[in-house]
Length: 216
Image (tube, rainbow, N blue to C red; front, side, top):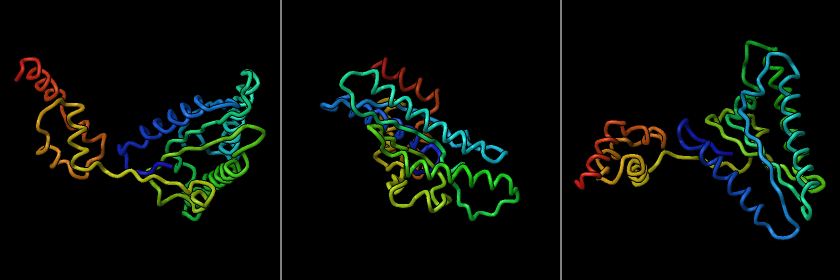
């Protein structure tokens, strides 16, 4: 699970990890290991009526498992397949069940969805050559239900911190060109990666590019 404030790079790191996993399995030795992936948002499982969210998340994992089995069946020499389920903003339906909610129907639906999710994490990890890995992001790590972070579930959490001064300079150079960004970067202490990258205005980028072309 990747944790961090909005704009900290959670979704980006999410994608990097997925690509790395798929590349790793693609280069695996015999027996060949395939991989399939799906990406969803936690809000996709929030519904007013009890049972809808839990049914949708169950169907999601079932679909990934079926895709893995087809991958094994349709590829000679492949004996294993890894399904990668990516859930952005997982806190949408995994917040603490002790939280007080005025809407008891909504609370009950969230409980059903969360319980189904936890059972899927426990029982769909590996079966007959199919292994399912779940990767998630959240900007509310402290609000997650304790059962979600239990050992064997999401116990491996990567906290993404705001970029350091050196990292801010590197980001500014990547979007604004080569120049002395140290003073600007120093004023951006505590900014997220997205905020730093957006801190260079279009006009500033154009001026930097013009100076570069003129050899200044």
